[in-house]
Length: 288
Picture 1 (cartoon, rainbow, N blue to C red):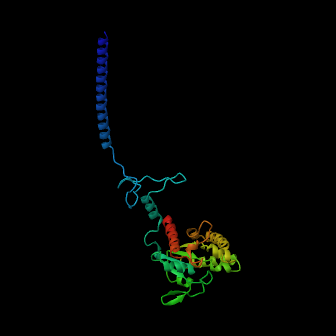
Picture 2 (picture 1 turned 90 degrees about the vertical axis):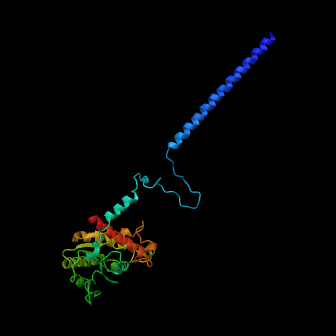
């Protein structure tokens, strides 16, 4: 009896062992099949670029591949930035067309002289001189035309222009009153209209001076310049000519000329002359 029981236990043990081995084999085969399926699926998926570089090269572009348009990045105000192509198209539309300034004359003092030296407006004419003011535009022979020295008003009578840009005011800050300046400016506008009856006339605001210059001078400071600009804008409106707030193109957040914009705190350097030109080109593009 004992022998029978022992043999039965052995048979059960062998049977269970065989079952375990068979099950293990089945599970192994299933595992191999699953691995093969996953590998096949992965091979069908698109590969992505690495997010870093092992060498000293440049980091990868935000676009995953050539020809793929990068997603627009979100701004803090919730709107999206323009793509580079859209920005270029917008800039192209905003800028003045080629040759726009060939029939333009810019009238002013030494600041306008500086713009002429920068020469950022192709083909423009400059009737400008150091120290020139709204009253001496009638009396000071500083413009050479045909070998003769003429005043600005006289020179305007010798040639026709399609556009006239005027900037005066910084030298006149020391005048006895702003009313005297505005009356003289209005008189000059009338003379320009008479000499150039078909021209568009643009009166430009006065540029600010640097914070250092403004805080150290009782006359040539940005408080007085801001007051003059308000009066110039009102005068331009009454005279029916366009006012251009070019000061906004070169001012910092406090309304001063940035310290790096000028050597003396008054006259623009090359970089800021380019900003001035950019404003004039953009304003021309908006009208066309």
